[in-house]
Length: 95
Figure 1 (cartoon, rainbow, N blue to C red):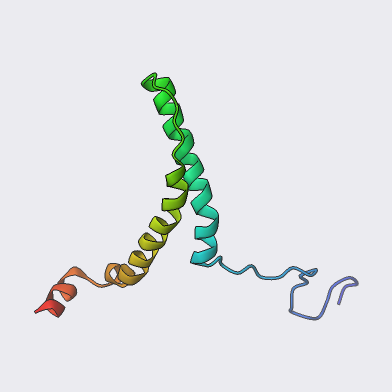
Figure 2 (cartoon, one colour; figure 1 turned 90 degrees about the horizontal axis):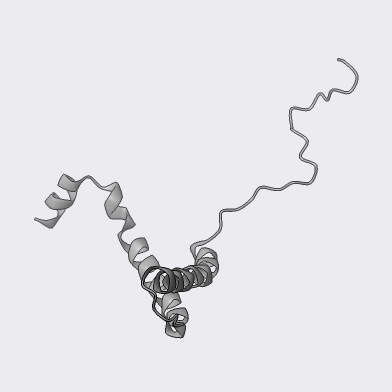
């Protein structure tokens, strides 16, 4: 065996660990404020540059959007199994 090589088949990781997939809850916590901010900026730019209207802030959007994302995410989680089932199988299950 040459010097500097290891007889072990395990790779050296140097303290790195596997990264976990983020949960839906953590994604929503991060996505909600950024989505609200992007919507607010887009609305302001369209109103000012395109339609020459005064810019208005929409503070209710910052309050409503997290709950809307929660409703959307729960609906998606409840119905995502339907995308994995062939349409004819879904129709047969109804009758």
